[in-house]
Image (tube, rainbow, N blue to C red; front, side, top):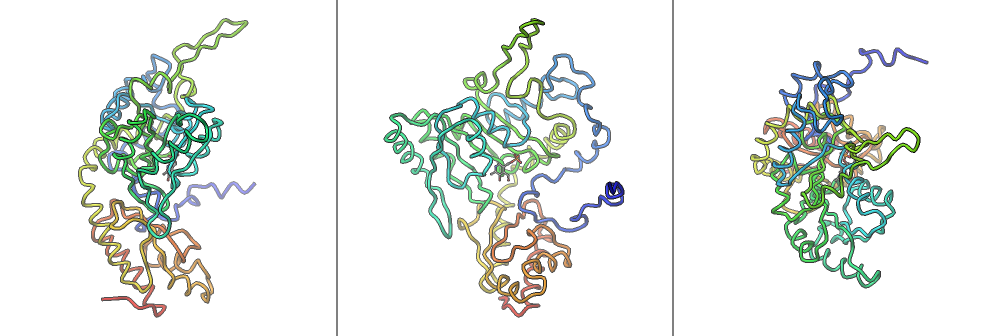
Amino acid sequence: MELSRYHPNNLKRISEGMINIHPIQRGGILTEEAKKILLSWADGYSVCDVCLEGRVDLIKNPPINQLKQDVAEFLGMDTARFTAGARHAKFVIMSAFKGGTLVLDSLAHYTSYIAAELNDMKIYEVPNSGYPDFRINPEGYAQTFERVKEETGRYPDIALLTHVDYRYGNLADAEKVGRICEEYEIPLVLNTAYTSGLMEINGKKLKASFIVGSGHKSWAATAPIGILATNYELADRAFQTSKVRGEWSGRAFTKKELSMFGCSPVYGLPVITLMASFPKVVERVKHWDEEVEKARWFVREMEKIEGLQLIGERPKNHTLMHFESPAFHSIAKSHKKKGYFLYHELKKRGVFGVQAGMTKNFKVNTYGLSWEELEKVANAFKDIAEKYGVEVED
Ligand SMILES: Cc1ncc(COP(=O)(O)O)c(C=O)c1O
């Protein structure tokens, strides 16, 4: 075993000191407040200093019990739990509808499909409009509900909408889908992995029965942490308590919630960083419009590069974006670094986050970059294009 590879000196992060535009990382960057408390809460069971009830979500010091209620209120829901990522939150919901039928958008993340598969659910997809904008038409939900009824004799048990998808960063019309679900009386799961924590979300207004969030993606928290918020009607179904009794010992655990593995799937730094960042997160969602404005400016600058084109909806309503770049792709064909040239050229210019090997298509996220940083990133792409003889508009 070569243990020296784990020496702190060898654990320097590759992106350190660079402008990070990684598509999944921008909303999870810690606030200064969270960074300040890292060391004092870094030990394994740190949050369990004063655990009187045997459940992390009920701990009062640090105020996790209060945070859970504040997070629910912030999302316009009645109650919430912290989960092991958005994926676990979806698994918890699907397990409450085990063996049933799910309708989801065809841009949903693989973890939505896996959560349903693990729970023996039948899956139906709402189609998208295809290349180049890949939009989800809310009416597609009603049509798919009818299709399910025709094929199975009954309407689906639950529906899921990916508020902003991970492939194109399209913002779906959650309000319209929510209204349709309400008409059909089908509970809606709104996956806000890329929206709650960045923009204002009110589950009641959107008629969502469940809101799923991702702390490490969008709430300035250390991974892994997700959020599952719901209303009082469905809370008992999602957070059932244990009924088991040891046949010999007679032991019972009636306070333990099954889907939270009895106590909690997440504690320590993920919970504490989410807590420390929460006041900033509550504040930052009010400034989402400026983030969209910056994203749109960035698209305009990038599209000055010959052939480079935004894929997904226009205008952009989110900071996660997907570009098609035939010019970079043709450079890669004859470059000695092949598809890796773009990644290396960006790194040389202090920009990190475009997936190594990608040139034909690539994704970036501009959330939280200052105007100055944004300009530096756009200039880096333009500079690389010009270096290889690709035309760039003034
Ligand atoms: C739309 C969407 N939902 C859920 C997830 C998974 O989130 P988590 O890592 O919190 O489980 C991702 C991850 O990329 C995602 O893009």
